[in-house]
Length: 243
Image 1 (cartoon, rainbow, N blue to C red):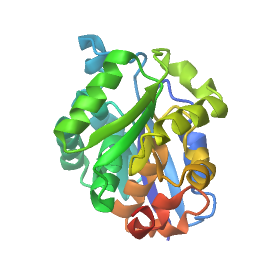
Image 2 (cartoon, rainbow, N blue to C red):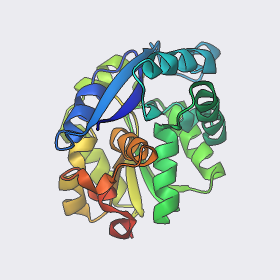
Image 3 (cartoon, rainbow, N blue to C red):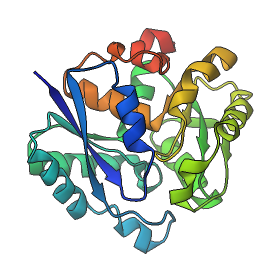
């Protein structure tokens, strides 16, 4: 029997799907399926916020449910700057509309933090200064202190996917110097997932990438043992490994 995971994907995203398939490469009984919502720019203006309204998310989820998903994830990180509680309400609204459990990248990262006892974290993103400040503030409101951050100050969301691994590795090293309990690479159109194993070996600090965290949360909702995902960082093995 196949477990089907549905992912609602920002339309400009080109990394989320191939990385998710790679994460699932050893799980022949789990499949991932994708539905897109239009996201063409990332900023704090009202037009940008409107891209993340419930209605298009619900319609995307309904399309996924034509293929009988077991769980769905809104695989975007806008909840980080729009508000973690607002993001939770969005997931609840989608779930109510389609009848299966729903999570998001933001809910996945904060869920990992809570279950692992992480209160001090490091943040690495490609975002502009104002979005970065907003994420730090919203996470603080939720009880998570950002003790170190690094960002690229870019708003060309489609081009995030082309940013080289060595750029991200350098930012992770920079943030690791603040000795957080965990570091999150936050944005589902960047290549943080494959860096978890090498950067954890180098720094000794767990790396929670938002694409990886989204899959972790969706698998848990669908009743799949996340420890079956290997080679992508300590987060999949269980929370004792994060302590």
